[in-house]
Length: 259
Image (cartoon, rainbow, N blue to C red; front, top):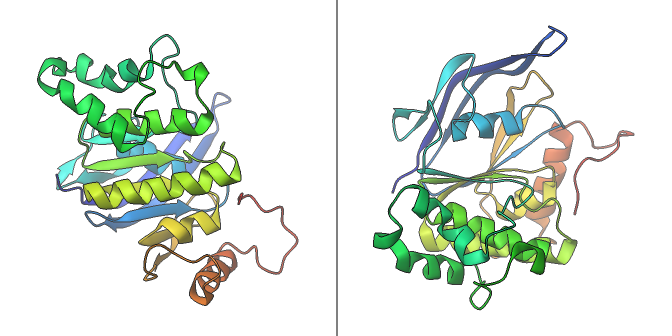
């Protein structure tokens, strides 16, 4: 498992139903090194989720190329796990069956059966294997979604605001869980977030994006050791720098991130 990701002069445009062209990405160049946790942050609608969809192979660039470990991404593949804001578990399947679903669709469940329990335990859901999604909290369902994405041993885990719908305390606990899994599996993670504090708390690098059509305004390297103190002066400085880049600091704006 490696997981180096490269965006090479990536542009993406859409044609709306009214026929108008919308330019989402405008020449994105970015390298994400193996094992890094990278957060994409920027104004709503700037193309963060579009970048994640291109990475997942759910969409294709209008121009340019996206690579993982030197291979051009052209379609979805189990080497990239994807977790959305909503857990998207199958309500008619219990947690064990949801986590095992990918193995069954790939016809490798018999050989990999023991890994289902391994990943359920990894995300802290041991004892809830027979529970159904409606019987669990939102945070527990997101843990199950993580296990389902991780069980395929992906090179990269792609996270599209997976903690946005959680309450503050559950969100902070899940942030720590993501970091624990990242370090335990030495996995590349790319996460879309609107939460500046979350980006500083989690990231090795923070990619700050401009309004649409998006380009990368700046890539910030976070050198703070883990676990991070949210009151550390460097943490606060980084937060302020990001807000300034986003042009929020000192202006009358409706803040689009949650703590």
